[in-house]
Length: 107
Length: 115
Image (cartoon, rainbow over all chains, first blue to last red; front, side, top):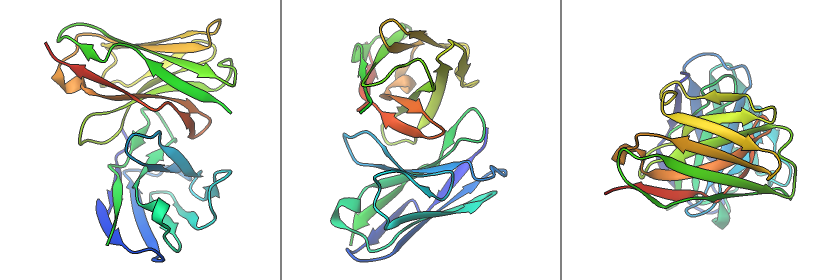
């Protein structure tokens, strides 16, 4: 299985901050990397697919970069609705695997 | 808009079989991969497996002997069966559509394994 390691596991930020979350794959996954936002009691929402492509309908303050083993999700100008848990997922091979999540909390 | 909804018992006894169904509305199940994912309390997400509209399933090897996924195109549903459950199988179970990414998800169904 491809291990996906996210960092940090949690962070505190304020509205307007720029937030960066990283995800590292245990082997190269090209750009087969997706990012999701998850709020309690709701279905996860895909933000970025294929490492850097913004999912339709997602605000442009979200962006992704990386290839191979190292990936980054950036949220520019954090908004109140962005406090949530974010996780990465590789779609390179099965079994699909996920990062353990990064909880973005209000400072 | 595609919507997915999980249904099934919320409580299962140890050693029994967990059964869940995902009903897809707003779109046909006759394309894409359809996936089951779970999240135990306080833990990360685990991919259980998926099934293509042709009926070919891919299962997580860590659970392969216990998990089965099937498809009913006439009802626009796909199902999960997990046998010989233990407390470690207590989790929120999600169904999702795989379009290269999980672009549509069900809300999730909490299944507790307890006697």
